[in-house]
Length: 473
View 1 (cartoon, rainbow, N blue to C red):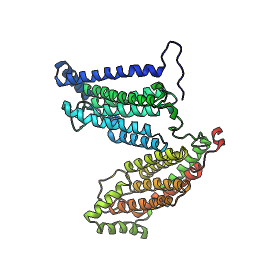
View 2 (tube, helix red, strand yellow):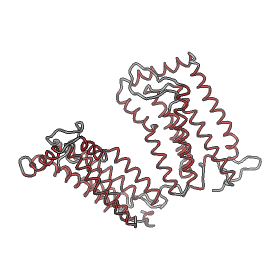
View 3 (cartoon, rainbow, N blue to C red):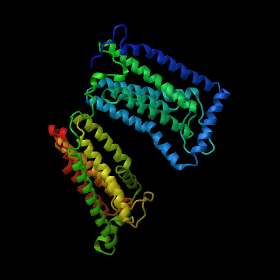
View 4 (tube, rainbow, N blue to C red):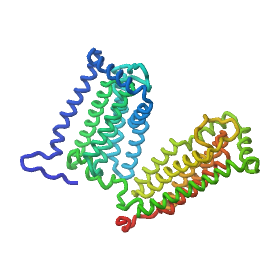
């Protein structure tokens, strides 16, 4: 992407950015250094402000559980698990698209933030706030806020890397800035950081992000690349390479018709699941099927040993919502990077969202009791039919197998089929071993998977390659 020449007598925007960036880095660094000095000297005005803000926010937040839940949900967006996942997926996409320099920049910038946070915390050694009604806890020292530092660096670096692909850049940059501010404010409202901790985290994050961005621009200049304004991102010429799905087709052709078909199919699937669950709950007691249901679980109970308990716990966690969510998101990111199409991603996401809705609605309607044996897991609010763990595991691995079998030509594609059999079987056996489900709950999960994934495959045709007519539909 060429840089437009500036009018006569004016320096190009990129050159102005290059001139002002060192001054900005120095000014921000001085601001951070001043905060460190004020905190280390324990100046009373600063201490009073910090404690007063923490106390007043705690009085507002602590009696309101809904507000605590909202703050906790927002603050997780600045936690290491989510941010490291974002960086890892973005770096993988960049490497697959052969943008190694941008991937290296993203990883190096994130690694620097991970090193800065604990080292500065140890250097300052400030204790966390003490409030009257604690609503959250956090380990380690308080200054600076790791969430504020990490969110500034990670979301800022992601913005600079993917900015060439963003259509409304100013609006998107404002949204990222708002997210970073919101994450920092939650740390104060939850009573785990002082105001100056968060300000210091933002300043230190801005310094490190500016240093790495300036170093990247210097490298481009020395390599002979044009230095464009930061408004265009770090490497504007990579806009097509980093575009998630540049096939130009709609992920769902004839979207209103397809949406109607999907919703209608969902309703029919729910109706079938409810009918099966109702019959199992009300008409199997005392029959051979009821005796078989309870007998299998009781037999598995007799096999319990501490090692098998541990193995079953691991298998059961493979069907947990967090594990399934992680698998879904990682696979979708890889699918976007490799296949450069949105249709497979829509297929997987709809499969998992529909499965979750079907499971919750059916469980709430049927209300089947758990098996009459001691259960190794804590009591769950949802009913026994159908098994959410088994259904989620079936849906994700069957959806993955459907995509891979048609898109991968090597014999390794059969490994996806093996996973689509082994993973649900292991989760199903572990859930029955732990006394959480009957064998017919597994039947419910299988019906859910077959009907729902089959419906989505028929409606979306996820392995259909882009067609020119799709753009006009």
